[in-house]
Length: 292
Image 1: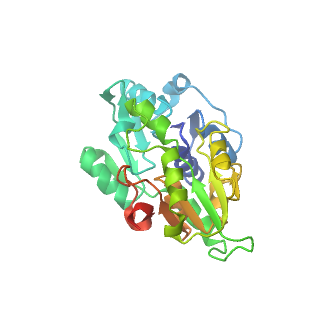
Image 2: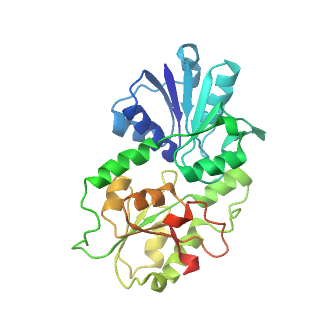
């Protein structure tokens, strides 16, 4: 029996697609954004507690989260019970921080990554023998989806801009007790984007802001108030890949969704301000607004 442990959205997308593509006996320890993601893809799921799974598990497969400690507790539980545990990293940033629990580094038996860039980065941080390069099941699913769409056809409704919001300040506050730890916040990035539209040759368009799953409802209402002359809607009710498919330009900071957009051959821009951190995504795929 394989036990899947997941909380944050990025890891949940990968692990739910892994389950879909790899037939086996599974049980699930899910919290937060992972619950609707798994349910949408796999149907009704019986969710168990970590304690309920110890006696009949021969492998724990976890994501990595900043919003929750559940995956780290799964690693500790597996180690204590001498059960193999594997963590699939879903991104390209903050690798070591993903495995700190109460100021101690807690590593699984194996760390899986889904592309060559992540593989090289992980090998530079973790013991070489535990880092494994695997196919990214979420990306494989998206490639198949986008392949069957007619992408790149201009919309009759005008130029569509999708802004991927990220909960940067809360993440930095929780991880480092400083919401400006990376030199900027999500508010800074949005304001920087609007101040530099001319660099992207944007004179008109429709703007959709997609809140992060961890954002509180109404968090981005200030955008509507500050930029009343722009046709802006705030929505994450439509699946991400559908929003990307309907967009001509996808903007964000360093969300995995920017890589997803690049898989769809969309123009992708990172709007991390000049005072912000170095872009952690594979840079060949992303245009940096501050470099234009």
